[in-house]
Length: 476
Image (cartoon, rainbow, N blue to C red; front, side, top):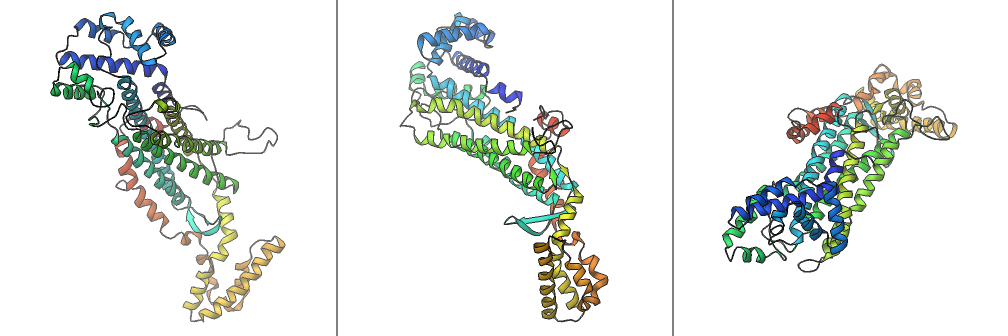
């Protein structure tokens, strides 16, 4: 599974440990600012040793082996690195001060990594839709040929769903708040004791640390942890995106079987170890597989939330430590795949037109009936002639494997002689797509909903890199 370096770094052991140290530093700075006896030298040492060295990790590992407590192991490791601060690190806090607040930072930063990438994919598909807004193709309902759409219109179906994902993820991002300094069961009792009953200073400390962590606000009400309901909401947003990826990948795979469209295929790429001619849609297949995996991962947060007891039980810990990073890494991998596919979709207009030609005669029968009626002939007589000729043509196709010759039969039937000169116009596939081109123009216009949704991301480097092709990551 290929994932972007920034997401790998975000969920690395180093980032976790250094975020914990940042949280302890922010706590100490806030406590010093509010009058607690913490020296400037202690703060300086904490600043200087906030970055974890390999030796720090060795010390933390030894401490955890000794103490069987990961947070306290890092408290002691930090204290050894910053001895002037050893006695005040974690003052008034509980383990969830660092673990939960760090997780909230990771959720926020992870969503911030995903959002511009998703917006860039939407932009690329929007450009694709505009390019092929007028190219008719067969639409399908029930897996069977239906009326015509356009290649661009079908891409807009994908965009519409991705826009819903963008909004869902934005909402999950905006709903995030900091846990802050809440103590062992969320009552802030330990900090009230530290500040000798001064409620105002406890609230100020909460606000100071929240601001240092880059959050606009913190939850007023928590237990020992922030509500695991937040993990549920984030997971649902990501799982919904995973379902969209499965849908898009499935459409591309179906169209590839018709040879109407292909995902990018490298010059020396091998489709099969045995069948040298094959061009398997392996990117789309992988996208469907990872989309399914993302949906499966999202089952864990609601079950974990539902299983929590009262103010907290620790059966949430192990599953969250694996599930949350895996959800974000999988979503990031899906965006890399989707970007790669959308950057090089190959369309085969000749194949698309041939497939239209196989079905269009039947679709055009209503047009033929209306045209002959307009010449003064009976609608019922015209309907009967078309019915008979259609069954004859279908017999040739189904029983004898021949081409659909319905139009030739119409041309040879004296009944339709008054409209023979109109037949080419009545069979023009562009007249069967309704308002698809106009819908696409409205949808993707500068003031349309696509651009309104992605506009705020255009200033971000991640968006610019993906749209320009510089940040697509490795070939997948």
